[in-house]
Length: 146
Image 1: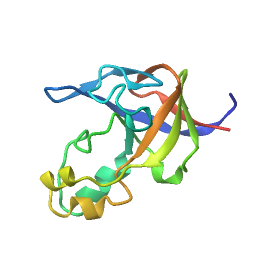
Image 2: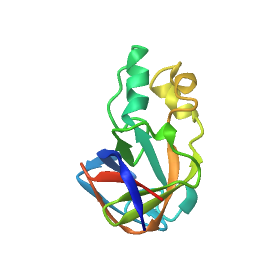
Image 3: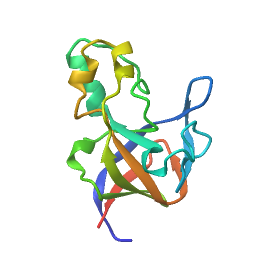
Image 4: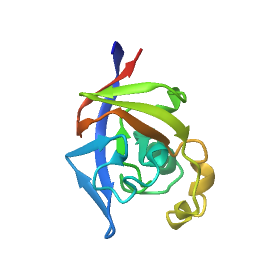
């Protein structure tokens, strides 16, 4: 696959299990989602959630302090994912992810702050599907696939 210039890099990686959220240095993904995540094999088109530092900056500008991972994403990037479109593909090491859909706002965000759902209405994240499996590591470079 041919890639374009670097979009940015992976900032943080998370897996959710029955107990809570775990920040990891690397995660394995395949066509069923993020391996060992509680959403693995549930719905492959909604099993991996990506977000951006931009979303966290937005809530902090509105005096809401939250930790990375609070938006329940699996991957946080250092670039604005809102520049991506449905169908775009990202390459991270050997992994290729395809943007499937924008993440809808859920009422769980109200546990962060009553205004969080409105603030993040179109900025929470996107669901992606792994079309080429592999391992994603922190600080890995992210390319757009042409």
